[in-house]
Image 1 (tube, rainbow, N blue to C red):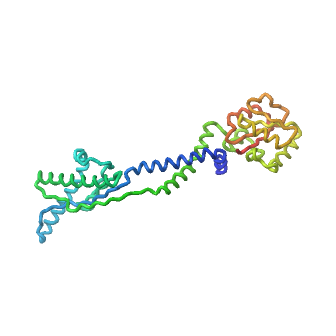
Image 2 (cartoon, helix red, strand yellow):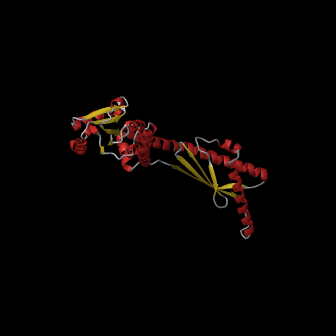
Length: 308
């Protein structure tokens, strides 16, 4: 299908396209809002230190203290994977806590909450539990580690709804034509003139816009062509949806040798001596009907494409 075919497809099913685009837009915004159900993000920066006093002239001793604190920070990081420690923290409307190590004995802890009050409560509990766990560790090992630095930052992350509305709208506009084409494909409707041409192995005589709104001059070529045929002409429309289009077309042509047939209901009225014009209404005529008509026709006939 070409770009023009997709534009015609959208025009035929414009209401369904609008509803589908609106649905995709709404779903996008709802999904983003659902994903952002904890907009308050807390970032904690902490540094592990010791209360030991090192001799300033002894650089090796200072290095050992820093190395010990650095190693202990990895132990603290491991606590967050301990189920017992996680249960003690009790996530208060919070996401899972993410802990990553920065340089040396520094740790960066992040989590998010539904409200600012929950974020503060969660942070107070976290700081208290860490302090208790470090004291418990010091008592068991004879160490003197402390939370040397504990800094916290609260941030409320707001969503740019206008941006996501635009993303949803563009997504809907991109998805709608393919969904509508899938609908016509599923129900075996002719979506483009090339499909009808492939069935009949014939290029269309003419492509008309919606017959109900057709202007008289748009039928000048077709009328002149029919006048030169010199015999009876039968317009064959496939499917009940095209009945009104056939009647409107014949009334607009005002040709006394033109007869309209509705296939398959009136397939027995096809005259072998008449000239046949197959009317294919895009989006409504089925490919199955066209294949059946093709079997019944003589070798000479014409194909007329009508775009809804």
